[in-house]
Image (cartoon, each protein chain N blue to C red):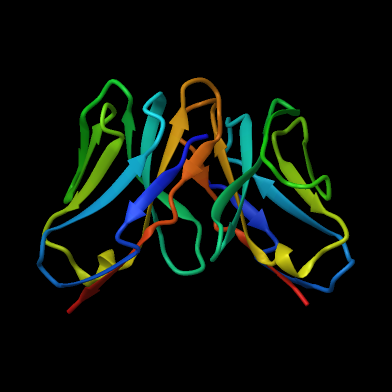
Length: 112
Length: 111
């Protein structure tokens, strides 16, 4: 059974700092991995999707990497801003048509 | 292009009642998935419908059911509500097995 873990559960950083969020998964047979952002009480916004054949994806100040062999992904946020404050979730989709399995998220606070 | 919409956004029910939640996917998307999000368990998959057929099902009791209509809109129903059913219910749509786009969710409170 696929399990996804995100560490730390919460993180507080000063504005302007670069930071890394971690995601690990137990079954390396994944189809893709996705990072989402969730604001309090809201739905999820997809940030980056990495196919299993890819090593990383970039969008603006965000960079996500994937190491299938070690079962790890990182989300790098450069020059953090207060508007980045949210919960960040990673989710994996197993090989084949199976549902997303989510981690419990990292709650990020960027202090001005 | 309009995003995924969910109605209602907020709902308060009492134990023993039943509830129906609705999800309208992005135009052209044929897959709709439902998730339950609680502080303790996080996001858990309920079920997925594709072209009016349930394609995947999570590990939830039979009180949770769903359906999908020919226009891809989907409903989920929870019967005999329990306090533990209080949660944010999210639906997501996709063309098939690619990126899922999530709606804003329905916040269900069971008293």
